[in-house]
Image (cartoon, rainbow, N blue to C red; front, side):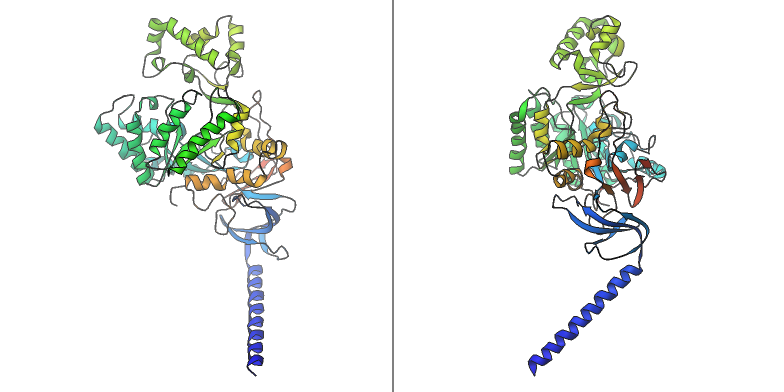
Length: 514
């Protein structure tokens, strides 16, 4: 009798469960979602294997992930994603641009980037109260989300430290206060650009003091380090790792200028691994090109840059400058390896300009361009070494690009990772590449509810066939948009469908802890 009673109890419970399940399914079917993505192959940003599911969006978020693909739902917009891969939108850990002047950011949207970080290389908007800038950006509503950082060089100028090599204590305190205010306004951390003025005048003591402020506010330091040359890169990393005693640190656009081969990359990676073993939280990012891009001032000695009077330098030290520039360019693979990217000589190598002007290239730099007259691409990196960096589990992907930069990384980086390193060279599976462009950056920077396909996360979403992704940009024609991303959604809104961009912009400034 007892067994019979138990059987009937179980039967009743099972019937109740079936009824409840049916009721829930009916309730789901009665809900009208904003977007219903059917039968997608989901690569969720964790690095785990793909799975098939329906993805339902409500407002700016992922409302439901349904792995039962026989289920049906009602939605204002239905996307049949059978045969397509669905991933989180890419997060660019090192980008440039002005969201107020060029809020469309089509170069980023076209290659699947839905969030960019700004304030890089030590330069951020020149506002003592960054909330003013944040409000202005939100007012124009950029096409992508923007994660802001405070720039060390800018803080030096705003605080009165300027170009001082030994700052007054009052000015250092003012800089610390400005940094704390910037982080309170929502910045994710501090960036340094120690190869540029005035950042190159900063001592390790100054940087360590600022690192304590960053750590106290749960931020991260991203650094364009003091020197990326083969002979000096380890010393630069160690300087950054010292700041890592106080907060997480991140090597921006990791490279070894003039370095060669996988073995050299392994030495650098071992230095970072050893630091992690000692408790230092250190990561890095990488762009998949063998030419860097920055202002031409990088070729000039410190004494020919601001705050020094360049015309005075030409009058008093011209021969010394000529010798310096010749040696510098020779070391950097010659004048053929410098491609001017802005100004009247845009698109020409330094060698070609010298030939056309019928004068030595060092004189072209001194007299016709000057330390602030152009930016350029510099072919100074080794492909095998850089690819070894890409495979490291703590290194993610960045563009170091902008809408106006004359370099293919600004328009092709993330497309190239899929096209070249996943499909052609097969350096890694798609799941790992997506993780390096989504989940890992979100985790590293501290961006909540982005970078993964999860219920309740923000609906920054891509749909594409990997085989259709194409990097169209070249060094000769760098401003060609990437192609192949069928849909790009930012905060639940379609930013790009096919190769057409929508007029509605749905990005916003992201804030630390929100």
